[in-house]
Image (cartoon, rainbow over all chains, first blue to last red; front, top):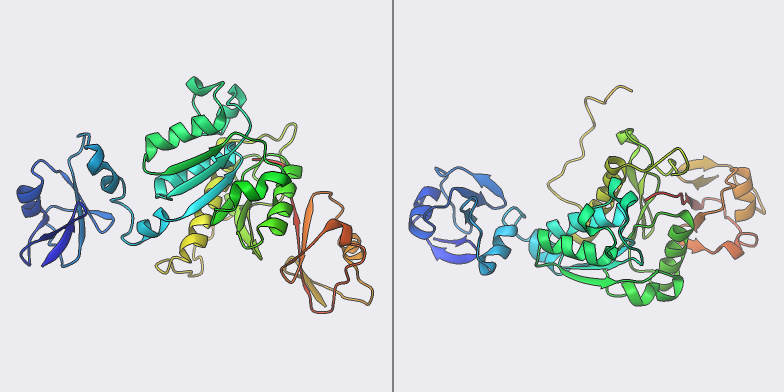
Length: 279
Length: 65
């Protein structure tokens, strides 16, 4: 029977165990990912299984790396994400966090746009590092994406996003993530997208100051607008933004973008919550 | 009766977006309004009439990110 071993089609005898594949094809491998999930060496493989054998601690060759990075993606899902393009408007707390998650998930192309540079007060919540202070955010973010997944194509624009350039920046995106800080900027982008790219879904981050109150963070859909956040907690003097809650909102946005690209995950069931957390 | 952000709200003749926002006390400046999924521009709030049974969404955009 045929299986896919590290993305190559190989013939194995029915009833073969992972340990035998290791011995024959990849001596030294000590981790097996079967159809996107780790399995034991004693596991028996079935026809058309996708098996990835990894030797922990060993740096793979560049040629090997891409399918090893994709080993924990569900077969089929990765191929679809690889063809997708997500636009990210703003590379601050929301944009940098959403971008890293989408890059790790294997989205093929990310368009990132921001005019600003990394400064020290960004580091309380944005995915940058001390040694990147002073770098343009789009350069720093592109570098961090490359370190996590070098197979993502990053299209970077160091530019202030205004109504006049929205269409040119994001016309190729399948989904756009709004990741600005200020409300007037969010409104500008939403208005521009509704008028100029009305068919492109826009995922907005709206209300995520402070900490806690996980249950209030949610996603609401209004036509082609997908609104993530609590829609109430406005950042201001004495009510700052913190990495966990901004990050949670950014990851809701990234997660929503995946659902838009792939359709609802058929494996997730929506049963009623049996043990609600008392407040 | 109309729907506003998922809540029922009484309808009456002559109900413009401007009037509806007053009735709901939606006085914040940064908003997006959609009627049955169609975007309504701010300069049209006064002369855009809500019809009985319409589904109105008002999104209040707030700072933070």
